[in-house]
Structures are given as C-alpha cells and as structure tokens.
Image 1 (spheres, rainbow, N blue to C red):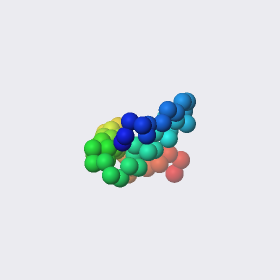
Image 2: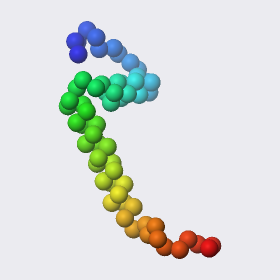
Image 3: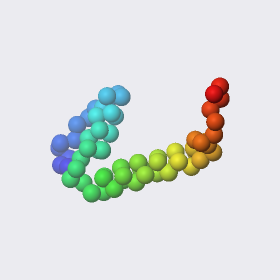
Length: 62
C-alpha cells in the first residue's frame, strides 16, 4: 500500500473499517496467514475451555 493512500479514521467506525479491510484483503499472504492462525487459535481455545461439557449426559428436567 502506498503511503499516500493511507486514510486517517477516527473512532470505532475507523477501527472496524480497518479491521474489515485487513481481514478481507485476499492479495496479502501474510495477512491471510495471520487471520487464519487467529481463527485457529480461537477454535482451539474454545475447544479446550468446553472439554468438561458432557453432551451425552441426561438433561435436567427430563
């Protein structure tokens, strides 16, 4: 990206817009790798923190 094309955004909308553009840029391998590793780490974190839930246990009230 050229230095002149950087736009200055303020507030939450600018942050959300920048994050969206960062995630959806299909031409940048490093960004895609970072986003995919982040999603993988979030999935691993969720799986590790939900391991104690027994889905086969009888539900209360049944």
